[in-house]
Amino acid sequence: MDVPLRDEEISTFFSQLERNLGVSLDISKKYLLEARLKPVSEEANYPSVGEFIRYLNRSRQASWHEKAFAALTTNETTFFRDPAFFLTLQECVLPTLIRHRSDLKRLRIWSAAASSGQEAFSLAMMIRLYFPEISHWDIDIFGSDVSLPVLAKARKGIFNESEIKRGLPTHYLNKFFKKIDLNQYQISDAIRSMVRFESCNLINDSYPNGSYDLIFLRNVLIYFSAENKSLVLEKINKLLANDCGTLFLGGAESINGNLKYDINLNSKWTFYIKKGVTLYDR
Image (cartoon, rainbow, N blue to C red; front, side, top):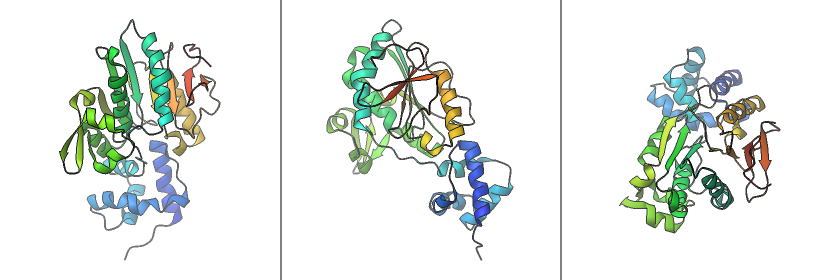
């Protein structure tokens, strides 16, 4: 007979989740456990989600913990999510960065919490379509996530009819995708080659090397505690290029008064620049 989880057991598991991924859930979110963890618990050969969580609570952290934690992250994403964000990129931020990097002919961009890749691929397609003058540049678009299954999907660049219809304009579909069966489309090799995907835990992992001209951290901090938000923003700030570093958050997120950033409101979408950057009108 399956013994229901006590609230104390759920809280213990949620505490582990926050320590490891930064994601903060309270007991009101316990309904997520059955749906999100059932496939993982079955893969681990546990008779119920409750027994699986009890095992995780009493065991040293291992691969099953990582799979369980990743299953509780939200992987909601679409092509060209938030049109105002992409218009701000197209009309303001990318032209400014391109002018500023015209000597180096290089752009480094990080899409953090990239999920199955739609944000990073949307950016790559936009660059190819609207900025052909930099087609010969060294353009490094890095997409990261903690979930290995969604990263595997991103690397394949294959999306079903439903995913294609959610936000992808027809002219992008016609130019950059091929239909590979009745319900699936694959993004072109030219676009896939512009983006690399790797695992990165924003709380515990070391961050990528070097500096980035542009970082997307959209719809991530809303799941973090105030302490972890500050921790991540401090780490991100160190990675932003001193001369042009630009950060985008989600529409409901802010830098929480972090003094190492300035805010730019003169656009369709608010973005943040590293303190001292003077490229943009404000």
